[in-house]
Each structure stands twice: as C-alpha cells, then as structure tokens.
Amino acid sequence: MTAPGAGAADGLSTEEAVAVRVRLPAQLRALAGTGAEVRLAVAPPLTQRRLLDALERAYPALGGTVRDRATGCRRPFIRYFVGEDDLSDASPDCHLPPAVGTAVEAFVVVGAMAGG
Amino acid sequence: MSRVRLLVGTRKGGFILTADGTRLDWTIAGPFFGGWEIYHMAGSPADPQRMWASQSNGWFGQVVQRSDDGGATWEAVGNDFRYEGGPGDHLWYDGSPRPFELTRIWHFEPSPGDPDLVWAGAQDAALFRSTDGGGSWSEMTGLRGHPSAAGWQPGAGGLCLHTVLLSEADPGRMLVAISAAGVFRSDDSGSTWRPSNRGLSSDGVLADPDADVGHCVHHLAAHPSRPDVVFMQKHWDVMRSDDGGSSWREVSGNLPSDFGFPIAVHAHEPETVYVVPIKSDSEHYPPEGKLRVYRSRTGGDEWEPLTTGLPQRDCYVNVLRDAMAVDQLEGCGVYFGTTGGQVYASADGGGTWAAVVSNLPAVLSVEAQTLP
Image 1: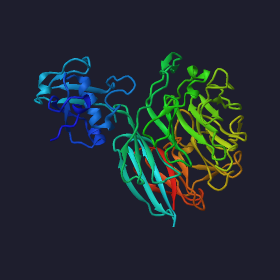
Image 2: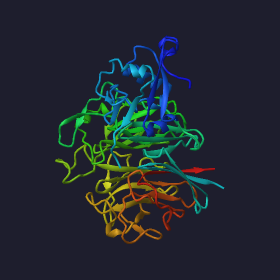
Image 3: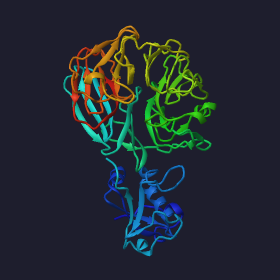
Image 4: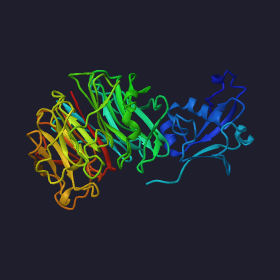
C-alpha cells in the first residue's frame, strides 16, 4: 500500500519518513473514504502532532474532526490509543512508542462510546 | 415539465426527495452522511446543481459538504470557521461569561446570483461568508462586534444564528436572527449591524420585556418582491414588519397558540403566510394532538387551519424552524418535516396534504428547489 503523508511536504524524502498505521472510527472512515486503517509516511521525530499533521494532509476532509481547528487540541470525545496505552492526554510533542514507528502497533483514534 | 427537489436534513443524515411538477410521486435518495446530524442543506439559486450540507456531530465537529451535481456526489470543503480576533465572551444560561465556541453551522444562505457566494449562520452565534463556494470562510466581524454581543444568551437550542434573509432588491440589506438575541439588520452587506427588535415583547422572559436585544426569535420569512415586509415566528407571538424589520407588530390573531418555530410565505401571494402552532414552550407538540398548518391570506391576524391529509388525532410531533419551505411552481407547493420523521407536501398552497415519506429520522430542515 502506498503511504501518503508528510515526508515530502516536510522537505524530507519519503525514504527518511517512517510508515505508520492509523486506525479510524467508522464515521471518519466514511468521511475520508478509506478503510478501517490507513498508512502514512511521517517524517521523524515521530510524535502525535506530526502523525496527525500527516493524517490531515493526506485526508483533508479529516481536518478539524480529530483536533479542534482553532486550538489544535484533541476534541473532547476523541481518545488516542497505542495497544492498551491511552495516549490521549500525552503531550502532542512527545515521541510515540517505537512500535508505532515500526508499524507493529497502529495509532488508534477512538470516538467515545456515547450517543443515540 | 418542471421538477421539485426537496433537501431534507435530519438527525441521522440527509435525504433528497425528487418529484415532477405534479408532486405526486416522489423518489427518495439517501441517507447521505448517515449517522451525522445534517442541520441544513441548501441549493444555489444561481446554479441549482450546486448545494451545501452542514454535517456535524458532537464527536467530530463541523464538516461542510458541497455537491456540484445535484447531490449525486459530494466533497468535504472548508470547515475552518474562526472567530476573528479571538472568541470573546457571551453569557451562559446562568449569566456567567462564556467564550464563543463553534459548535455547528445551522443554516446556509446562498447568494441569489453568485454560485460561489454563500453565508453561514453558526452556533455560537456568528455570521460567516464564503466567496469561493465554501472552500474558505470569513467571519463578518461587525455582528459580534456589536456592543450587545457580550450579553447574548443562548436559547434552549443553543446560541444559534439560524436565519439569514437577503434582499434581491437591495443587495446590501441583510437580516439575521439569533436565539436568543433577536434580529439584527445590516445595510452595508454585513459590515455593520444594529438590533432590529422594536415592537417585540418578551414578557416573563426578559427583565425588560421590550429590550433592544434578548428576544428569542425562532424564524423569519419574506417574499422576494417585498423585502420591507417581514414575518416572524417568535418564541411566543407571530409578528410582522412593514419597514424591513425596523419595527414589528403582532399578527397572531386567532391562532390556537402563537408559539411555534417555522414561518413561510407563499411564492406568488406575498400576503399569504404559513405557521405551525405548537402548544407551548414546554410542550413542543401541536395543540389537541392535531397537526395543523395555519394559513393567513391577509398578512396575519386572520388565520385558517389547514388539516386535509394531516393527522388530526394523537399527533405529538414538532416542526422545527428550518423545516418548512415553498416551491416556485404554479399553485405553490408547501412542504414541512416533523420530528417524527414525516415530510408532508401540498401541491395546492396548503389545501391538501400528503406524506411524501413517513419514517425518516427527526427532520431538522427542509428546503425546496424548483428545477426546469
């Protein structure tokens, strides 16, 4: 699968970027026109912010749906997981676990289980 | 033969209902954007194949969808709605200051003549404009720049700018309505605004019932040929202005209840007006369980019930503010959707009604396009 994303846009070759897997909730899959999981090329350092920047560049329709447009913060009913670790409240500039960078684990975007 | 296309926004997606000029047999397309709230769908009068849909929910925020082929395909376009100069504060329900926060777009108002120009009314209340078909949006800062803005308080549905009235005769003139701030008028294409609520009275709701600002205006309607004559369904009271909103007088007349949400004007008879009375502000369903559209042929004061084809017992649905529309065909089609998921149509100005569809999600909005 081709991994669209940030490498070239960041002035780095895609060879320098790492391929990551991102799982999306159903509503965002429909909005982006993707399957459950997308692959992205993210230029290092691999942080939550850079991963989400790459996601929004590759799928502009997702802009504002995971992070608030005005503040850049995670929307209140969104959580981020890697494996069983909840990274929702981690700093967006902290390095993500190495398993994300090796594509062993997906970065998982979850919508809160709520509603009618 | 001309055709009619209804754009129906619901709690769980959008639908497009199409019929020929007889308006007897309808094709139902959708749901579009299933599972999302579609507060409003609107088509461009200048290019009816171009339309916008306001797609939102509490998890993922606001998305704007645009179609350039009559709804066959859609593209997510600009959803970057920024309060210029920072959000500022309004008043919360308890009277405490609270920052303006973009929750959703309630209403699109496309330009009559320019398919790239469209206005968007937001919650929390602000007016945005796009000149590139919805790709990018700019706030009309003069509205929230009005000194009263810090004192605006939300109605039960939120602090929403839900109505935008443009004037073809005077392109610089605009009216907007905000729940619960009231009506504001601009005469310079939206640069500056002034309250336009003289004559409104909200006894028991406002400390000063006749205040300049703070009225819960539910909807406005005007006939394109007479921009000075504007009709209003207020929280309570049906009102009329003959001076473009500068002053208002009550025309509730013999209505069984003057509480309600939508109001619409006949396409060819500027003095013919439609409302759907609702029992009260705490009981949002028709009086006596009878779903009745009321029509005035005299510009208000004298109203007649229209009941043929509508349920006249055990009916406890509501009709929301943007959920009534008229077409431009001879005889004037009138349409409305209910919170029970029915869309009713009349091809004879309200004389007789039939359900076009009966089991949609709760209907939030109905717009009618008249197509060649």
